[in-house]
Length: 148
Image 1 (cartoon, one colour):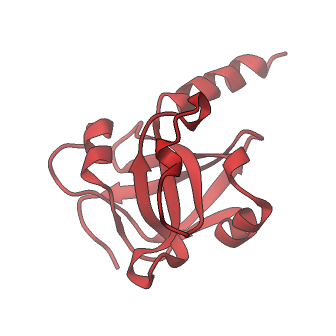
Image 2 (cartoon, rainbow, N blue to C red; image 1 turned 180 degrees about the horizontal axis):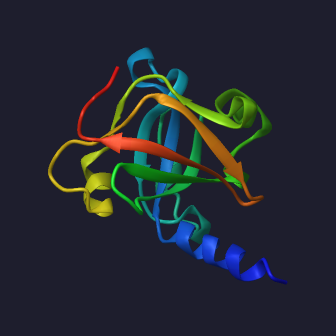
């Protein structure tokens, strides 16, 4: 029982994020390989609205809540139900999420997160994941400089 308030708090924080569809892959490689290729923000797929599922991309994708709690960091809470076993093994090998090249955050997402006018990027790196049973969560580095 002692852990219930922490779990409930975590769930509420995650769900305060921006609900999005994240397409995996390298944007410089036709969404193949590792990283974040695209992010589409929209209403909840849980309410029956299919706007997040309307993407015509045949790429691998998942539903996630994105939020920023502190400067230079972006939390991505991937919903476990949207991650098949093959997606988990390919895009989260060894409990890590690999971003091969910098990914520019879409303007609509930056506005929703309150990041300001500068263009922000998810920086390349190997990011540890945490799986709490509901979410695969990663914290990625962001800033307004593209790194290769």
